[in-house]
Amino acid sequence: MHAGSPGLPDFFSSSFLERMMRSFISHTFTAVVVMAASSATAAPPSIVTQGNGAALACASCHGVDGAGNPQAGFPVLAQLPPAYFAKQIADFKAGTRTHPVMTPIAQAMSVEDAESSARHYASQPRPKAGASTVDPAVIARGRNLAINGAWDRQVPPCFKCHAVDGLGVAPAFPAIAGQHAAYTVRQLEAWKTGARTNDPQKLMKAVAESLSDDDIRSVAEYLATLGTQGKGK
Image (tube, rainbow, N blue to C red; front, side, top):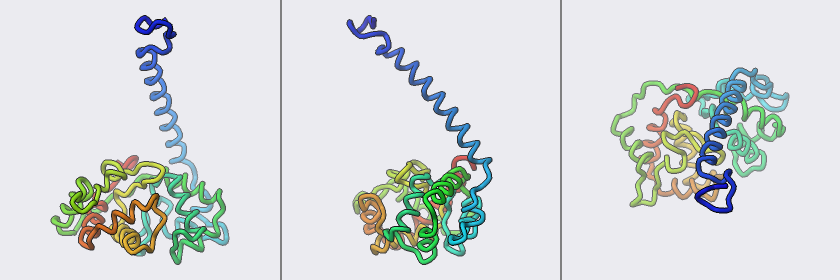
């Protein structure tokens, strides 16, 4: 019996619960490491490397490593939460998010295609950021917005939802660190104008509407400098 609480068995004691929690965390961490290592070494699924006949291979635009192509406008997919990734594919299929290239590709993907490509890209390291040539004052402004926000204009910090250093919080808030600046600019502009509307509870629309064009460029340029995250560190 628990001496401090008459009538309660020992397994309700704080020391027992602490031991159980430590054991749970240890075993969970080990399982996650093993699963991540297994995913990282597994061969990419065919939808990524070959497509499925109707849908182009993901790698043709985003690369096998999910680094994307900033010149062509294709975003980084590496380390996106699988549930977030799969939701974007589902939204493209349903028409709640639209893009001239992605919409027909998503419509040709099966549920298994979406899930296997999501798992693959979640296992890839975030790409390294190159040296920035942007004015340091622009980067500093973006950093301040990302960390502190602009509460006088009802703009919360980016990291309030997307976590410290923009690592993301699964399943709804993707990693934004290291994303190509031009892509981030386009998405913020799309939310601001209403061209993109598939954010949860219109959170991004509310934020984007309060950002100036200079705010958008600054925060996008700053986030692009954050570089490699997670496994790539």
